[in-house]
Length: 415
DNA sequence: TCGTATT
Image (cartoon, rainbow, N blue to C red; front, side, top):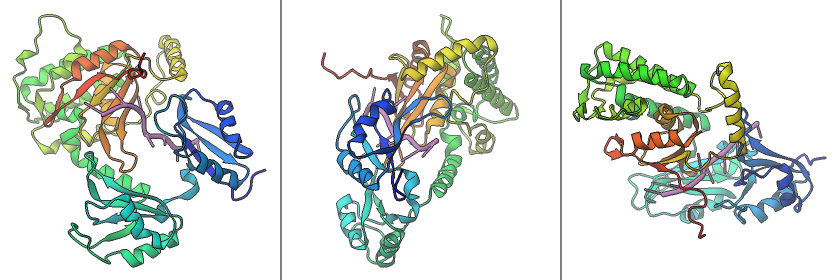
């Protein structure tokens, strides 16, 4: 049925409304398909915009890859289709090199030329910062481990490139696990400074304590009809209020007397708006704050089951989601996020405003670095508006968040 | 500065 050396392909940039039966005709022209599966969220069944494809014949896969990968764009997509061996096919890590101490001006092509003599290169990417300047390092993936090893043997420490401070580094790239560990350490170091909750609760004066507790109670009350995630946020607030009672210090940088508007204001907004005037003043909050943070990235599925009277409504919501993205007006765009923020942190930041369908920081594909913007989708426009009202202009460090409605998909289409 | 996703 399938050749033993068949290749499982990953197919990306598929419109989310296309199912297996719609995709089949596109791929069948390259050969008989053994298996084609649209990738869906394990819990919600949401179409993830990609698929796995295995042809009976290895040759069909190679043909499809060269004919389609980056070659054409499916209707409604703004990037070309991806057709390449699935991650599971390669294990990649034992043939992927990290190259350090490059000169800043060297391009992908320059690096490729340097490594070409050692074998066939699958990928070659110089890492670049948000402004496009080289970070002086690159990833080079060979087809085999032996080729990669040969490149290390010959090139590592072999020379010092112009503009580099020491000799060329050529080593196997970190594995997924090593990378995860490294990231965790970074997060742990910076949590107290940058996490929105820590930012606001990590340290504050006795002056705000009563306010905190009151707001926590208000949020808790709201959360009864908002979402379990909001409840979690409220619990965190109460947790932090308790920590405060244990004698932490804070530095108000702006008088918060402005927080007594004549008209009644949504307490959720107050909870955030009233707190943005405080900044963490001491580093020791990390150990207290950090345990509150690890949170499951999945939103809908991992929440505890709602009380019976909410279940029907919840099911309706999930069915709506399956049909597609949140409707226009429910999705917000956030810019000027701190570099360190991940999906989890923006989720934390916006969950007090309603039921979050998704929270996504845009990450550079090549570097895994945040591009400092992201999206949060709510299940209703009012939540999105509340989030914008409360969080647009919210100061984090030296920057202010820009929070606005995500442009509708057809925004730049002429008429 | 507007959704890159890996059973």
